[in-house]
Image (cartoon, rainbow, N blue to C red):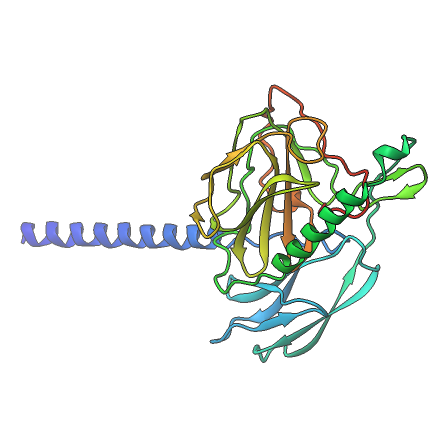
Length: 307
């Protein structure tokens, strides 16, 4: 009898332990399905609840692109990149395949002001030579074809890791006026990094392209799935090949000052459904650790560049 009671007590303890373990696993699973906070502003990301989960994933599109969707906490969410030049007010999405939200879906884009800097410089520092302009145009056409990439595998995470630990600028969306002429806004984040400092993939994905571009210098473009791409520019060296699969945090190159850059740094950019969005919305908050060198900034003087 005593042995039976001991066996029952041990079985009960094991059951309680298993229940606690299952509860912890469920808790971690919920935390793993982190939903990004919505920032429905130009250059931001709108996160829109599409309703309860169904057996098949919905398909969401705007006027030009297919939209990334995320399943979390029993619901589908549309994760929509908003162009920097998006008009303020009502925007539209079309949803198919989820009966709760099939049809036209509307949401509001709020205003956001980005800084503008006016500079007076010599014309030679603004206008491209015919040869440089021709090179830029060829590269622009090549890159435009890449931006439409929408691979079937959804991203492993939407919470990106900083590719280098250096100080982050808040220059995304800022615009410069050179001799009164407006240039394209800054479509990425500059991170301080010394020449040769390791640069790592912000998330698991596949190397979509590598190359040496006029503005961006040595560049790696990563595809993370469902229209989420990341760019790593001005690299001094590239250590990966097209088609290579990388884990989050895996080395892809080294920082530098190639292309139109005034000093060593990493230009890090995020594209979502073919538009540039603020990387700060997907990166974990900085830890306060900074690079020993503040780094330079890329040259945004010329006419429309990749960033």
